[in-house]
Amino acid sequence: MTRKQLVDEIQQKKSYLCVGLDTDLTKIPKHLQSHPNAIFEFNKAIIDATKDLCVGYKINTAFYEALGLKGWEAMEQTVNYIPKGLFKIADAKRGDIGNTSSQYAKAFFETMNFDAITVAPYMGEDSIRPFLEYENKWTIVLGLTSNKGANDFEMLRLVSEDANQGEHLRPEFLYERVLRKIATWGNPDNLMFVTGATQATEFENIRDIIPEHFLLVPGVGFQGGSLEEVSKYGMNKDCGLLVNASRAIIFASEKEDFAAEARAIAQQYQTEMSHYLTTAAL
View 1: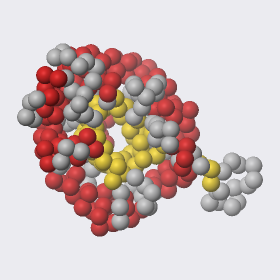
View 2: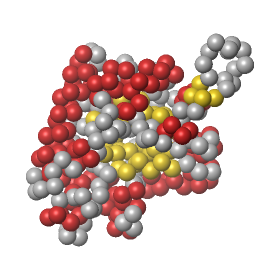
View 3: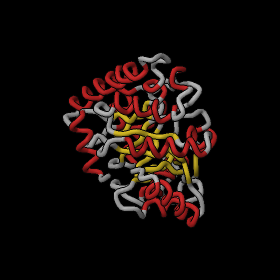
């Protein structure tokens, strides 16, 4: 999917909602748990109920890998079922030496036909470069995450690389170094960054560093992130946001009405997003 196609979808639907299919077999409605293909049947119902309200789906691969072969089959069925024109993200957080990353890229971009994959930047450029080499595919790099452990490394202060900056400028955070450096490896047409919704106070700073890139924003919903603050401080001229909601939508109900309840929550997000897009005149 190209950037223009993604932006057009956002503008047409007045939505930048991404529905996270973090499908936990133990949490889906009991009437589906005995189904021989329970995960796919659940996902299929969620997709049917929300596809006109969102612009994409994020599949957290851990929930599928944990089930072995049946999980992988359910994931592939799900990806193939998502309608054309909707953004398909493999939330796999891969990243390894070059030849291994090349195989990860092939698995998710060719075999599974995802539009994007999340990657971890710790091993540097050669671990990310193989993903960036695919045309009209997106590499989504972990930037500033929403979990408590983000403080362990991402918020560490570093000595500036530029010795001429002067002593009055504050040292940069590690996550800032990551954003600045990785932004030079790709471009806003093939590179996004994960930025947690619970880190809304940093969004203005992030936009100073990467004003044009899209941000994938988890953490709205159960993790307590504010959609209003994310939209206020994170939006750019193309919207530039994909806000992911997982549990708040897909597990809105444990009963047979789960798809209708999922749609109702997705509709709430879309309505609020439409307001912010209209206010920003996008």
